[in-house]
Image 1 (tube, rainbow, N blue to C red):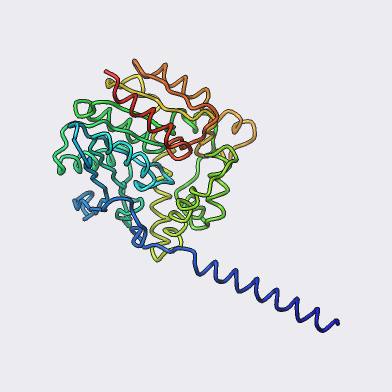
Image 2: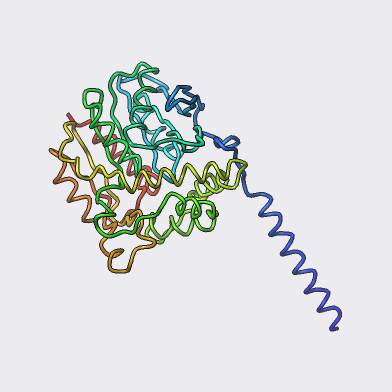
Length: 338
């Protein structure tokens, strides 16, 4: 009997190990520029020169399936997102006659990961402006989510004549984390942190910070996207560029220039969001002062001349993914306002 039990236990352990190996083997792995990942619309590339090197910027240019309304919207992704994460919004907007341009910024997703690059929001805004010029887009509504909100703000400050409207979706940078006491990390420290990224770690962080402890199965594909990029053959390059980008985000606030915006601006804020760069290593007292979007959204709306604030009570960092139908209709209604 003892032998039978031991054999059964051994068989069970072997099966569990086999299942774990199979799961590990099945986990997606993507190339340095996210090769192998499926984008919701044809992925194109804009090749250009910047900082004495050749770079390639991935983007989607989605034309409306029926009557075009003559307006172009540019969707800018966040730090832990890609252009593909806008898929539900792209569909909703294009069906209403909008042309939708969705770039992946240099250092992210389907774009080049340079061995060295001086990252700034000004540089990324200029890259985006050059892409739009190549596509013949003279004016557009600029919609930025998360880090894309910081970039969208910088774009509107640099190119107000080309910005018909600015929409910020849970943008980070509504506060200066460093000024509030969040500790500084060196690029080397960021790099070591990024080298350790895993699917489990990404999911835990996003569930706690982005979605107020909640999780939906459809979020898993975006965890796989990031984890697959980080575990791929470009692992070290991906981590290094991510470190440089985090340094850019932390040290280049747009917060102090909100009052200089001169374009119509709408803030769309999930009030349960707690995203704040550096809060993970901040003291409990400092962390308690960071990432309170229920307050930050209202404060930002007061700082931006004529801004309109739309709140999504109880939603997290990505309302366009958490409640796409509600978010997209709200966005369309805002875009239709005079």
